[in-house]
Image (tube, rainbow over all chains, first blue to last red; front, side, top):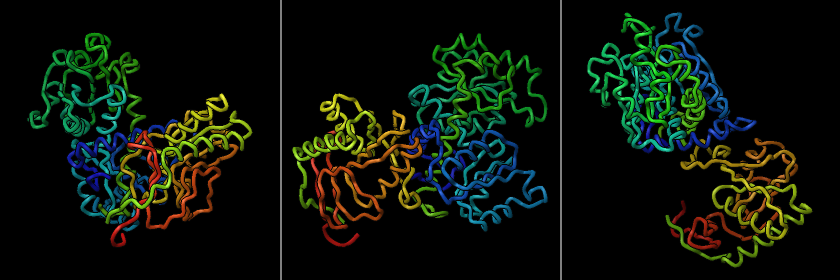
Length: 311
Length: 184
């Protein structure tokens, strides 16, 4: 049983909650290796994916997770929902509430949208990424992937490299790492750092090569060209040269250092093709972990309490 | 509300004898153990399955495959009772066409076994599913019976039966607890 009804930000989860989610996900990952990848656990529960911003992996990951738990899933996307007709988020929430769904996964371009939904409906809300704010299930699946490969989380030094400013992944991963006793370092050019990087609570380093020897994990962020108002650096080649993960940097790092990326990758920008396809890259492990972790989140939020009743 | 010990219905020797007899019965009923696999329901059922496998190997000279089954995700009461501690299910054999013996410590309502059968079926289509339990305490809520029983113990619903195994507890034994004081 988790200590929260919703997962809106990493602040909702205690360290014990995180460990419980990861342990439960471990059991679910076994299910994903079976021939019949289906459990009857959440039969009769309704899970709505409200994705008002484009997404492939997160939406399909939640969708598969819901299906493998036998929950009924519905997808609302920006183009197919009444949002294009001008319906407000609050009215969408009330509509979904009236259909008595049990859990809503929301992705929205504005920070705080999941919080607003949580305030206006009875269902459990899971943040599937809100603006430049947070993406908690991504951070959880990242922790799961690190723990599976490296056997521990405590004491790991994790470099989060690149577009810190726009990154909701960093927004969740930094507090998540701190909760489990790992040490996050944010690394990137000043133009891609928030105005006050110190408030993130992570160490701040502006040179990847300087931090590289310390890292157990190099977490390469996608440069979010679509969110940037103007090009934050002179050229992709220059970015790749100073902040991209490539074969030479991999060779210079600790031999057991792993490389992660939340996807989708800009090959040749923040990660070279050579690294992306190397055995030290856990990009596909992350995708694989995503299903198990989201199954765990749904199971722990919906199990043990009748729908809509916080315990 | 507390529970107090009412009686010890099996001691270490009784458990040892019962497991030995069940091991023989499994071999006899299946005409050998070449097609038999054991699946214990975690946690104590899984330890019992190990013990049965050791005995079968001693008597028959065949190492039967042993798996463990966590049935938390198959329960019919997920909505009201969440199991906080979920274990990994580990079925290291091909279920297809096997004679699978489910092993559990106490048989009560039958709901756990219903869930365990569903879990096994998700791995394939076994030839048969059989059930071995150490204690059958009655009060079934589903049409389920055990093929191999260590001991039948008449109980009242308000009582609790616990099997103790040295793998998890300080000794081997089977104990009935009685509620003292008011109702739940």
